[in-house]
Length: 439
Image (cartoon, rainbow, N blue to C red; front, side, top):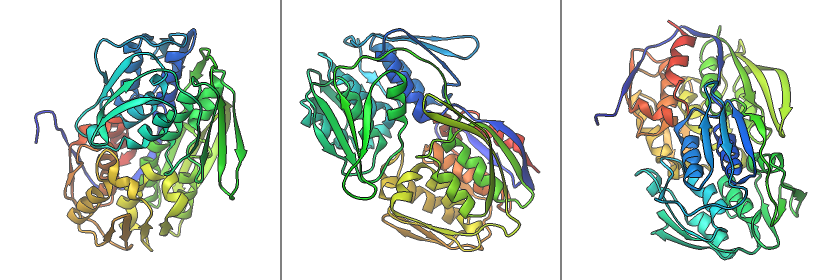
């Protein structure tokens, strides 16, 4: 165990009761930070994510010439550069954040400087060729090391392209839209599986015009953005993070008398598939006080579990892509369902912050679960009782949190090694979990 690694002991719980306010949505925080950095004027953001990743995006914007001020009331003010980034004095450090590296590449590529983007060890293992291809077609000169970071971008004028996304990726889509915003001509992007649309909402919020139209094929959509548009600062509150809510939603499913209220959660329809899954598994969800700001819906979620307990389900295809970040916690609670959970078409999990399929398998095995591992997912039978164990987070925030939830229904205590990884997205996670779990 390294000197910075921390261990959390999770004891079994009797039930979960109470309410929690979640940190600001990571995906939206990244996008607001970047667009505020290139916009004219000063953007004010409330409930910005407390996770480390979006703060990597903020630090990169500062290095590019934006001014970032953390106010005493926890709002963040970002005075943008009005459309022109400066040559950074040092490499842009993206930390652990693939979102920062991929989306920022599109934002900075049109600027006449040389930018180097670096990250931690885990980030240098993640695939970056997927952004080089479309940006290269637009005229960007991008150097990778065997398809990975560090990335060097030799910036300059870009031209519009028509791009079909080969894999569903909101980050790749965003890189292309951010580059297209500053390119010559109108850039279009076609996706056959619709990915989360926070970038479209954020661009419109900052004053950009982009259009979405149905293309050939039932689910195929085409986005178009004209180059040469300028952005203007906004005032916004970032909705609570639904991916962070997933852990507590799953925890509530484990106990027949649980009752949990999650306040001010983002309810974006391209993310709300998670709520459909929770309902399909036997969760009873009430959504209260829905509001819309800057195209993003927020609401309060009340969740408990149906008297019939937890059913199982099969997750594959478009659904697997839509809830890719939530799959580890669904896998972690799968043994407690009556029918088990099957996850397929989720190869993308192998190139996240870790090989999440391998780590889920390792930790399920440690807790005594029976399952079958596939290249693209897992088949986990139901009606199993897990026991406490030593969990290896692999320094992956979602693995650390997922197995903390599984531990609530296990027999005996569970040790989460590498628990500090949770701070990447949700520094307050263990505090909230201990407040809600009745023992």
